[in-house]
Amino acid sequence: MSACLIDDTRLRQWQTLTLAILLVGYTGYYICRSNLSVATPSLLQEFGPAGFDRRTIGAISSAGVLFYAVGKALTGLAGDFAGGRVMFLAGLFGSVLATIFFSAGSGVAVFASAWVLNRFMQSAGWGGLVKIASHWFSARRYGTVMAILSLSYLFGDAIGRYVLGAFLSRGAGWRDVFAISAAILAGIGAITLAMLRSSPRDIGCEEPDVSAHNLYGAAGAESQPTNLRDLLRPYATAVPFWLVCVVSCGLTLIREAFNAWIPVYLVDVHGLPIGQAAQYSSMFPFVGGLSTLAAGMASDTLSRGARIAIVVPCLVLCAASLVLLAVASANHNLTLSLWAIALVAFWLLGPYSLLAGAVALDFGGRRGSATASGLIDSAGYLGAVLSGYAIGTLVERTDWATAFRALATVAAAALVAAIAFWYHARKGRAHGPRSYDQDVVRDAGRGAVLR
Image (cartoon, rainbow, N blue to C red; front, top):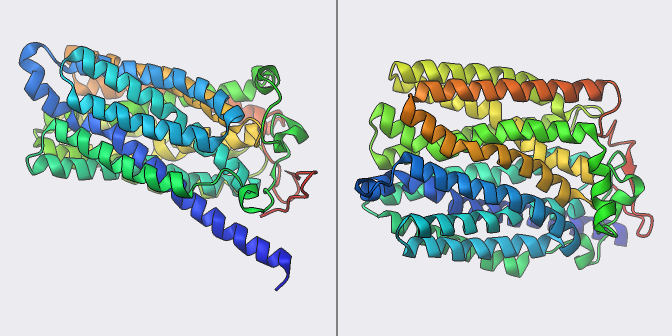
């Protein structure tokens, strides 16, 4: 066997290993994020008599989302300079410490401080993951690879909710939920620290290509930017990029609202036991995982700038599903409500997963991928600040049906921005590969091959 084939086989083996490590690692991140949603009914029961109500927990959730949004931008920028592995591990172990802090605390001030710290540390994870993926995988596979990696936060959320909900059903308290999730993530972190590599160059192999239509041109194949100005300037003038940020704002708001409130909704409206409600809520990310795989693989077959086209029909159906959920809630129909939640998950999470994943890699290449992902996610989570306090307040003042109708309006607004991006793409102004078979950037210094 020739040396070329040996190197190619070795690279493929390491690509598979890296994909698995990142998938499991970011799954662990979400176990330490879904814990608050799972524990919320227990927290309300224990501290409710002292004034700890839905508005309070919503405010804590929103504060966490705000710090997560700010952290996304900051850690995204840092990730393109420091490297993906450093950021991924720093966020992981920081989240472990913050979760332990929450489990040992008591009172609104402690809970808020611990949750804000946890979300800020977790903001480093996805940008670090995207940066690593930009080094290991070819542009022709961005959609499929990022769809697989997106399963980490969808199935990770589902696994976290189901497992932690099972502990609650067996008599565990909310402190146990946080301690268990911290222990799981710490164990995953130890394996990740030992096995994760930043780039194929760490094992003596060449890096695959990037899209020729990234915002940096030929410089997009470089690992690091030269300075902050050169890193940010292409994004400042790219209208399609900011349209993606607007879409992200709407989709993330809806997603975070469901992540935060599904267990409480099922208890409030349908009278389910707390543990069962937590387990039922795992359906949302699980169904979303199926949608994510379908959207990611389909996007790799589309022409230049057309990934976003998947979002348009999906948002129409997402808005309709939210209206259906409002009707089911008003009629206290559990079966119809569960079906509507599944439909929202399917039409929402597939398109959502494209934005800070494959689309961010299309925009940033290797040079600015963490920044693209961070800015898109930051815009999304700034909108999602409303998912906690605003939704909690709306439900306290009106009802859940009104809240779901409001989220349907958000989906319609995001649809307008997605159509505008699609218009730019069809006119040839949107960024994105025409055909990955033709439009690739090779690393001139290393003669990188397409894989």
